[in-house]
Image 1 (cartoon, rainbow, N blue to C red):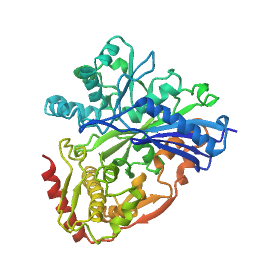
Image 2 (image 1 turned 45 degrees about the vertical axis):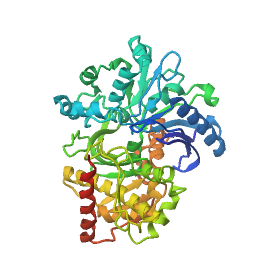
Image 3 (image 1 turned 180 degrees about the vertical axis):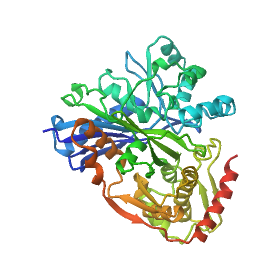
Image 4 (image 1 turned 120 degrees about the vertical axis):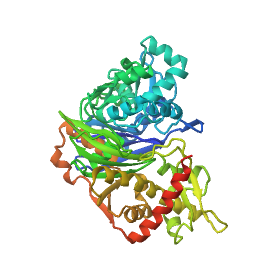
Length: 492
C-alpha cells in the first residue's frame, strides 16, 4: 500500500526531508545545513549542486529512519525558499554560476532606478511587487550583464533558469520536466498577475528572454516522476508550493480574511484574499497563494528578510549565544531591554518601507548593557518589524487582525510568541508542530495523489498554545513610538 508522502522542505539555510503518514503524523525527518556564500556585504549565494545532493541524501535518510520502502511512498511534495535564481546548462545539467539567493541585494541600485522611472509603478501593478532585489528577473539581468558564460549559453539556447523548486524537479526527473508552480512563479517578479503569463514586456525591457523560463503548473499537480535510479522506484512528484504559501495552506488559512505569520530565516505575514486579485497601495506584495484545479487563490503579503537570521547573527556574528534555543531564557532573565533597541536591517528593510539601503541599528547601549539585553532587544525587534507590516495589512484591509497563527522555527520561542500577542494586540495561536511549511506541501501532494480530500485538512493541525495580550494599550503605544522614531533614522 502506498500510504506515505515524502516532503522535500528546501529552506534558505538548510534542507529537510520528512515522511508523513495518512494521519498527518511525521514518521521521520532528516535535516542538514548547506553553505552560505557571502562574497560581498550585499551578496548571498548558494551552491545549487550542494542543495540537490543534500536533498537526495536527506530523502534517503528519512526513508530509512521511517522504516519504510520507497515503494510505499505515494508521492513527493516540494516546498522551497522563494525567488532564489539558478541558471544551468540544459545539456550538462551543471549550474553556470552560484544561485543568487532571495536575500541578496546586489541589484538594489538598478531596482531604485526602475522604481524612479515610469516603469517601476507599471511593473508593480502587473506583478504585485515593488521592484526589489528579491525579483528573480533582476537576478537574471545581473547574470546576463556580469557572467559571460551565462550570456553565451542563453544566446545559444543552451540555458535554463528557475527557482529552487524548478531546479529540484528538473534533476529529480532526470531533466524531463522544466516547470515551476503558480505560487513560486508569482514571487519571481516575472509573472503578470493580470494576464496569467510571463511578463514579456518587462523581461524585454530587462533584456531577459522569456524562452528560458519554466512552464507554470498547478501547486497541487503533476510535476513528473523521479528517475528510478534515485530511490529504486519511480515516485510521482505531486506538488510544488512556495514555503510561505504552504504554511498558509497548512495553518487552515484557506478562506478569505484568514492569515498567518511564519518566523524562519525571515518573517512573512500572509493574508488570504480569496479569488480577488488585490494590488496593494500600502507597501504589501500580492501573490498567488496556490492554484488547485481551475481555481486560483491570492494573498497579500508583507515580509522582512532578516528576523530569524538576526538570531543566527547573534550566534555566528557577534557570538553572544551558542545556540538559538538560549535566547528565550536570556530574554526572560531581564525585566526589559534596558533601553536597547535593535532594528535588524542587516539586509535593508522590506515591507512596508522597501528601503534596501537601510542598515541595522542598535541604540541605547550603556555600560549597563548585557548580552541578555541585546538578545531581548533582538527578539523585540523582530516583533516590532511584524507590527510595522501588520499595521499596513490592517490599513489595506480595513479589518483589525484579532486571531493570528504562527509557525516556523523561531515561533517555538515563548518570549517571541508572547511579545507578538502583546504588541499586535491579538490572540496568537501556535500549532503543536511548527512544521507548517512541510505539512502544506504534504497536503498538496496527497490531494493530487488521491490520499486526502480538502475536508480531511480541517483538523490536520492541532493548536499547542495560545498567547493573549498581557500589556496595556498605553504601554504598547509608548514602546512602539520609540521604535518608529528610530526606524526612520536608519533609512539612510
